[in-house]
Length: 448
Image (cartoon, rainbow, N blue to C red):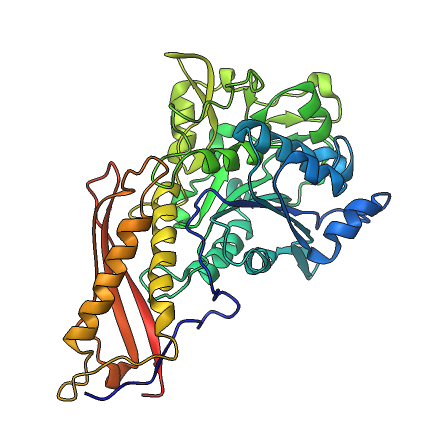
């Protein structure tokens, strides 16, 4: 049997790495300052570390402060607040990637979202980021013939996710897949220039129908005076939000667990999240008269309706006195990729597959000369290597398997002569689930 050229694994530019991170706890935060002007004025330290879209790796709040991200300082303290949220909840040093960028462009006077910085962050992080939190003052909703509709924001974030992850039901070989957790402007509709911002939580549009499976939208915040004072300094009274808490939950729980876990993710575990609210409703610059839509004023039926429309919000349970949790871990989709947990497990498995296939670069793959298909012996070698690596890596910190069932195998019908590719079929059953997820990885052949 003749050797067949080389397998090329890097069809996505700048996403191929010599090492692979299997640590699903690693997060990043991208702060969008595109609607602000002269954002670095009077903040030379922050400017030196973060101007020109720089990406910085920190391990604790003190390192962030040394880079100029101080309380009540840069961007009226928003970055410091979320980084502090994150490390207070995690309770120890941990990797966290931070970046600032103007994530907008303009077309005919209209704001067009551009979050290509997410790709750059992942490139600079060498693919380590499993979930990136996006904090932006861009609006999620607009007026659509008298009803709430969606701006281009969610579609742009889905596009960035697909660029790194691959498009669903389309062969992919990405090792840098991540999910996007969004904290955006929910306090007004796009184009609303009035001084009073009104948005009703009773008429939110259905986001699940968008089928954006790489995006999670988190509504809500801790409604303290400190938070409200920061919020009223934001463009369009954008809620301060809770992106730091959401990412901390991603760090605290393994990939297969929901970040709404009642076991691990009580946001009020240190008595510092006692006033959950949506953060929008009826807002002016008069803090005393504002209605931020306290969760206590949103009954369980309405919370369920909001959740069924695709949004994650802070919620409480009668059996858990004084505790506050994220309502669930859903993404804006139904089916296989409907939850953040499913996406995180799949993203981890993609990295496992590519780490096994990488040594085949510049190597030979044997082919059956009679059929033009991959030789059974080579297919078996690759299949065994994939399953051995998955057995070793698809486990959580307690040594428990992160999937209930799994089959990974090289497709023996991969016709190398005809298609210049090897197909790897994957069927897995997520933990605590009876649904089977199917996906396929494809690796291109050169020199055939």
